[in-house]
Image (cartoon, rainbow, N blue to C red; front, top):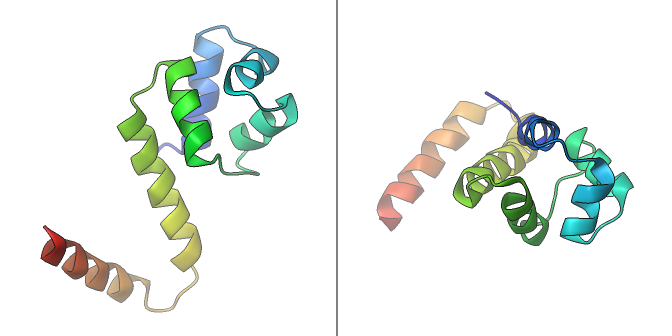
Length: 96
């Protein structure tokens, strides 16, 4: 599965945008955009919205990737990872 950082970087490059141009559009410094693209930092939801608009990527797609990576990062080292995900699925189904 493609990582959020990889998608953002490849889209920026395919649009021919420089790091500083994206940084200016989303109102952050160039170093932060670089850190996001290198998976050293996760963008905030607000930054994600701005990146979506600037890079013309569906926000819902970005948001799903963002949450998956965020949740996985929290639980990836748990011994019972599959059981946790199974229980989470049960909770989600009850909410529907």
